[in-house]
Length: 504
Ligand code: NAD
Image (cartoon, rainbow, N blue to C red; front, side, top):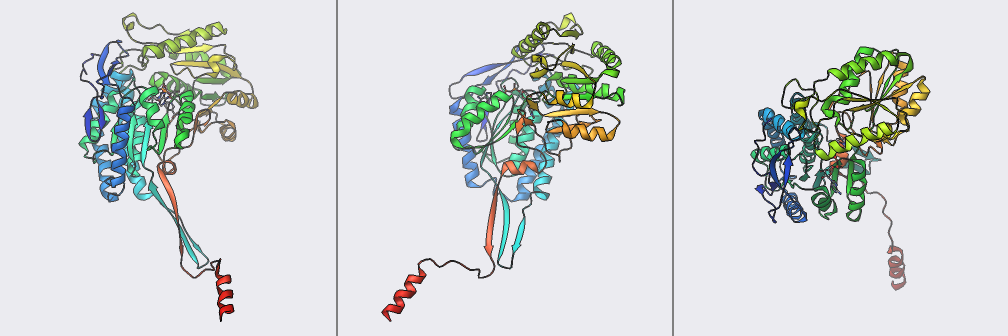
């Protein structure tokens, strides 16, 4: 794959693509070759201040939030249409930037267009209030108003999908937006800026500031004029953001890390469980928040299951992310690659057995970690407890349902879980017992957009998705209206009446 995207990626502020005031840039790297792709404007507080100022102005003047709903939603549909038109280009940019295989980025990009169409429909049909008729005296009703300036901070692992997942509900509900994309994957965020520009949204409604978390991201979080922060990223970053946003009392949505179990009982459809297990950990290069990174397989089938798993691992196609048949590509960045390697060393030191394919020699320039199984793992080992975020599966066995539920829950995360059994009573029981925000029974990770998304424990706070996003992206107002002459206390009136009597 060539590094041919050489133009500098600029911020998008107040309807214009602009460099940083300081002229500073950082270099975006191709994970397949570790060569530079392009410079990126490095934003700091200065650019955040001007993006927030333009978003605040656009919100205040009502060019967006008070626009006729049908007109606002036309813009949202137009964004979706433009994503569809440029689907190939977006998918290629995403693969170039992140190392994700092209067959997988194409699917994700299609989903990004759906995010906009879905929220256009939802706002029109499902953003509904409640009304109460109270004893012929009052009517109370609720309305949902946009909150103001939404700060959106996104990670690098599925950038376009996750950005649109936040931008679509934020805009459709009438907020204005400042997006701070991840510094390792600026290309498709930039493309989203180009698309939104072409869709003709009023100036200042949507803004992008590129840059690092500690500078640009932190300035967005601390900004007094930003009313909410929707964050997806690591758990420790989430904690830091909540600390830094405390002084300006923001609302937060936190989509954080995961270490999700897949529980394979001996009475399941083994072949399908195997397909789902392999896809669930090795798709998206294992850089997936909901990856089933901890396998618990029942002892009675563990030998056959693990041997089939090994065969699959040796046959997964590792290669150039731009090739249609590649199944696993390089990890996003050298630093992340080193971190995953560090975990493999820890696994070895902790007594786990590492089973992995060889990375072909011609791929030596890229950040390749081959699909890897960590065998003979115990649940209290570091590699069974911490998020590795690469193509690495820890494999453990269990005997009973009670034992596996306890092991599955003995971890700080609670994002997702997968259960495989043909005993449906057991399936429901275990799904109910695993501490996680989202459970799948006899299913890979497929998600309908109407369903809430989010984790428990250290995996997040709040739910986005479906109509649940309205709780976050809108301010709920209650209007109390008197429709009769209800009793009102008359403080001070008694004395006036008394003195009127005395004077008479
Ligand atoms: P990260 O936390 O390092 O960075 C995420 C974003 O936060 C980036 O844009 C970064 O620049 C910014 N940031 C970093 N420090 C900041 C600070 N102090 N203030 C403000 N912003 C700051 O995460 P990552 O490495 O980009 O992404 C991988 C992580 O994201 C994994 O833990 C993964 O599980 C998680 N993730 C979770 C979900 C989910 O829905 N739960 C989805 C995808 C990824």
